[in-house]
Amino acid sequence: MKYRKIPDETVRRMPMYLRALSLLEQEGQQTISSRQLADRLHLKPPQIRKDLSYFGAFGTRGIGYPVVSAAQQIRTILRLDVRQKVALIGAGRLGTAVAAYPGFSVFGFDIAAVFDKSPAKIGKKIGRLVIEDMQSVDALEARQIRLAIVAIPAEEAQACAERLVRAGVKGILNLAPCYLAVPKRVKVVSLDMAMALGVLPYYM
Amino acid sequence: MKYRKIPDETVRRMPMYLRALSLLEQEGQQTISSRQLADRLHLKPPQIRKDLSYFGAFGTRGIGYPVVSAAQQIRTILRLDVRQKVALIGAGRLGTAVAAYPGFSVFGFDIAAVFDKSPAKIGKKIGRLVIEDMQSVDALEARQIRLAIVAIPAEEAQACAERLVRAGVKGILNLAPCYLAVPKRVKVVSLDMAMALGVLPYYM
DNA sequence: TCGCATTTGTGCTCACATTCACAAAGTTAC
DNA sequence: GTAACTTTGTGAATGTGAGCACAAATGCGA
Ligand SMILES: NC(=O)c1ccc[n+]([C@@H]2O[C@H](COP(=O)([O-])OP(=O)(O)OC[C@H]3O[C@@H](n4cnc5c(N)ncnc54)[C@H](O)[C@@H]3O)[C@@H](O)[C@H]2O)c1
Ligand SMILES: NC(=O)c1ccc[n+]([C@@H]2O[C@H](COP(=O)([O-])OP(=O)(O)OC[C@H]3O[C@@H](n4cnc5c(N)ncnc54)[C@H](O)[C@@H]3O)[C@@H](O)[C@H]2O)c1
Image 1 (spheres, each protein chain N blue to C red):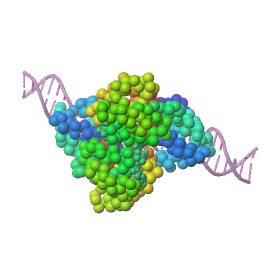
Image 2: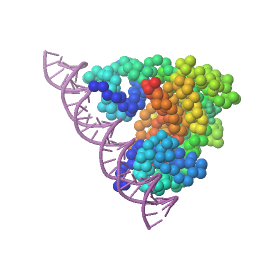
Image 3: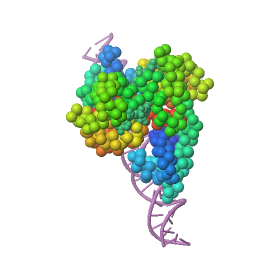
């Protein structure tokens, strides 16, 4: 396929494929067809084929996609083939849950530091990590941490994001219910649980 | 505007507008223009006007939208004008955080029950709620609970969703990293933190 | 009362995303 | 070796949503 800009939607689905392939890897399955994968993920087969083909042809006609090497390719594409360190900002109720969540490791993420502004929390341990003060955020670059999860109140989140950007952070997962204004070079993905819940009654 | 099917994307943005308007309500602002609102939410003004106009014209030309009545209209549209009870399934790390989260009340949600399968947790209190056993899920309809948040391991989530559907649940917020197959009449919205984080390195 | 400034509501166009349909390429069975 | 079958990769068609541009409506001041 001649070069085309990769659609954002395609990129968004890649981790989905990677998760499924990682699972199949564990199950020991050698190959999977776009149809089988589509059934699992509740997508249409051509969607999957087109998505994967943006990054080159790595399936075998008549057979499907080789599970292990396709997974590895997607890891490379998404830059998840190297372990990515992540800073967690906010050791409150949600932050504590996130810090203990093993689910990030499927994608090679490693919560490498936790920060909070509350003096009562600084120095306390959360799993194997010691909660650090917010000053220490400024040294993230030296520690090769370029990703952050923001789990502090919405009113504090914008200032925090700016501090993270100054500290060299390149990507932010925002769990606070607000928009974060950042330079274009920084990517923000926001998840808002209340908003997600908010649409459900409409469809009842 | 002649009748048109309301785009899913428009519905998805409505809670966003409602959150902003609720905030403005508190701040005591009387009216807001699409431009002002767009600046806050980082959208383009025509987007907001078009979205709102799907539900009828409720702005005033030359002025903007009346904050209080627009908020009330959106609440009615989204069926958030009546208090919605929500069941929480899973009182683990994430479930505990969710149970204590006050942010759902902006939209009129009320976590009305918490369930877990672990005998060690059943009967314990989590805030003002007592953790119930999974048997009790079957009685949700009688308690007028038609929404649920699923915060249990992915392997258990599908079976749980089926049980919820049998119990009359009409909408599910799924926090487990998996697809939930449910009848078409039931709406599922899934949030997957690891997947959201997974795209960030690609953009670095 | 009139003209100017403001802002909504919406038809239209364009961009993006999904899905179809089929040729190309490979496998399997005999 | 070949015929039947499977599945990929992709151009084209279709569907969906975003944004522009402008008419219509309203407010306000002179
Ligand atoms: N609890 C949930 O289930 C839940 C669900 C969805 C969204 N959220 C959002 O996640 C965020 C955190 O929620 P929570 O329930 O954990 O709140 P929390 O109050 O339990 O914890 C917030 C933590 O952030 C720390 N903090 C506050 N301001 C800070 C700052 N400027 N810098 C560093 N640390 C700071 C506080 O000391 C506290 O430890 C909020 O924005 C909330 O809306 C929470
Ligand atoms: N912890 C996080 O920050 C986080 C982040 C993103 C997603 N998640 C997802 O949320 C879900 C819960 O995560 P967690 O960290 O709270 O896990 P957890 O292990 O701390 O808690 C899970 C809870 O669910 C209960 N449970 C298990 N099976 C059940 C069943 N069939 N019916 C009822 N209850 C059941 C367990 O008793 C336990 O209390 C998981 O799917 C996880 O992947 C968690």
